[in-house]
Structures are given as structure tokens and as C-alpha cells.
Image 1: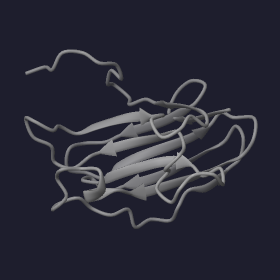
Image 2 (image 1 turned 30 degrees about the horizontal axis):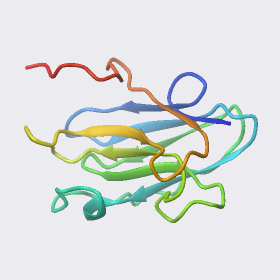
Image 3 (image 1 turned 180 degrees about the horizontal axis):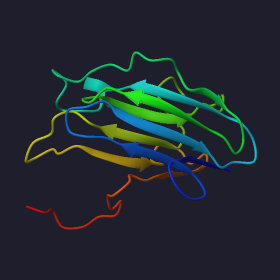
Length: 141
């Protein structure tokens, strides 16, 4: 089963600028529907929480196999996106998930995103961002 946040067997596309909202495209490349959930984590998982915004949009919910949905995320959001398969906690606990720290960042804790299977592996996930490398490398600047 593959659920993608962007490009390939599973995908999420993140297109953004520093001060604008982020547009995520959630692509379902699984052979069955997925139930996508956007969950705030804010202070629970980020050392910087004073300026983090909450996601107030409609949940993406059911995404049929081979289709996608677009979600607009606040510019300084900290949270997770995951497939609620009925076994995950309210914030994706116990499942494969994607984590995003899109608040202002600084020299010690820049904006970041990752895929986490620490609490459990439930499916393949992918994150891609147009025009950006998604692998570890040296910091520019």
C-alpha cells in the first residue's frame, strides 16, 4: 500500500514560499482508498510553539485510489499528515506518518519535514517538494 504526499509510488507535493500558506497535494497511489488526516502537534513535538498556527481547514478525508486532493496549510504550521487506517491515534500515533515543522525556524532548528515509522510501520509514504532536494545534504549559505 502506498500513499503519496507528492511523486512516485506514494506522494505529497509541497509548494510554498516563506510567508505564504503552503499548498499540499495528497496523491493516493494505493490500490484502495485512504483516509488522510491533518493533525496539529504544535507544542507537543516542537520546541517553538508560540507562533505556530493551527490547521483550520476541512480534513482531506477519503481519497480514492489513483486520485488526489489539495490542502492549504498555514505558513507556520507544525503537525502531521497520515492515513487513518482505524488503528492510528488521533495524531497518527502507532502508524507511518509525515511530520512537518513549518514555523519560522532559526539557525538551530530550521523548517523541516520527514517521514516517521518510529511508532509503527503501516504503509509506504513519500514526500516531494518541487525544485528542492529531499535527501540529506550540506546546508547552503
